[in-house]
Image (cartoon, rainbow over all chains, first blue to last red; front, top):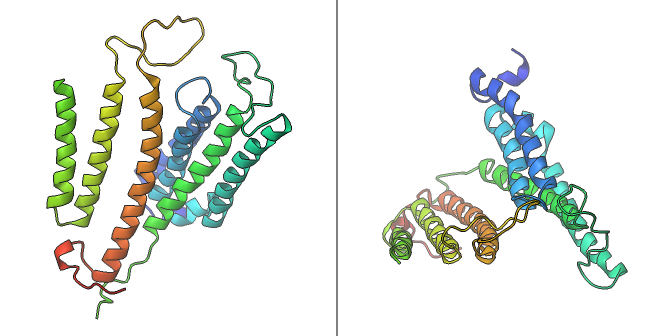
Length: 150
Length: 112
């Protein structure tokens, strides 16, 4: 047993988590990148990406999960998503107006199509994934001092 | 029509949960039930009999589809519901930190 097995849930849960957490993350990436073709998109894929990290934090404890995505790093990713979305929207001014789809649209029903919509989905997924992970961390790591009432 | 009535029943259950229960966590669950009743109502309002999902995919001709506008609205509503639920849970945790209880009848101090 290595050191990362000291905290968290039992060995069964940890083994299953180790096998599935990458698949969950990849499924989230799939939902995000196919957001303009099939149901899903930035928010749904971002939630699934966040759930993969939440899965890790539930099974292994916070140290192992923070090694993959720390609180500060989550905050940076969230801000990156917001700035990316805003800059994609502002880049529309190169052709005329806000949120202009300035990239060539391509052929419908292909992965590389629909102009800026996949890029917007990716930006939203950064924002949502890091944001939901940060909400979860903020809720579970809040230290409560009960009984301070005089 | 009866299905809208069942939706109303779910809404009333949510209101009952908010008004009658004394535990803050149960009141938050009431808010969630209420939100989902409204979401369900929107989806039902956009339903067409024998309609398929409003997804445009290659090689298929869409003849009869459900209304996509309420679905887009409900997606936004779910996102906002997630944020408000997180906010409510945070406030409930602060209440527990300050008063040591979730019972609203025992939270009596009005300062700070």
